[in-house]
Length: 257
Image (tube, rainbow, N blue to C red; front, side):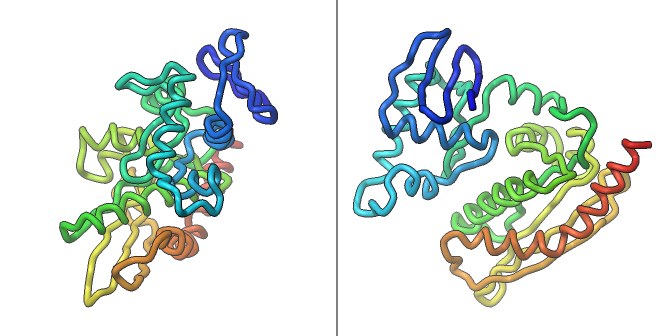
């Protein structure tokens, strides 16, 4: 498989990077990282996931420092070291993803990549009821994990996190935010602490009239464990997915008509 972006071509199998036909040198770690990011563009990759891909079982290393060096190496190879990244997006306190500028532009302008197929939805950032760095961080990870999980559901078209953040600067109301992005529904959630339990509540809201289409709740012990967002997302989506699939099916039938 050959990935083409900007002036570059990257051979997924061989790990060879070329710019306008000329080979660009990459370190082995930079090659592995670029292969990982390009294998699933737009998807957010956590620092822990990248650590395990680059240095499996090497927990004794200063992994964050080593990863920063590899990220810098890849960005230098791509000429992507300025303040406005064209290819690799940094997700603060989480990780990285490959998000080329032409794709960013399409997402921000609401241009679909597959015609009018798919039920369009957006995952809004989690609301945190209590000011807490740990809760805020958990909310960000849950939002990213939900976006990634929904992106893999057939029949759905999920707005990218960058697009959602861009539109949230204009509106605070979930319904208005959804309207501005051209989606049919938004997934809005809240994190709250009660008696050392983390309560998670999600609502699927119809953008047309603000009605609640579905809802799900789950709770976990607090302080939260590492990677707890996967358990939360699995639980929440297990409850919401039947309704989502119904909406996607109706969209598909409407398109066929």
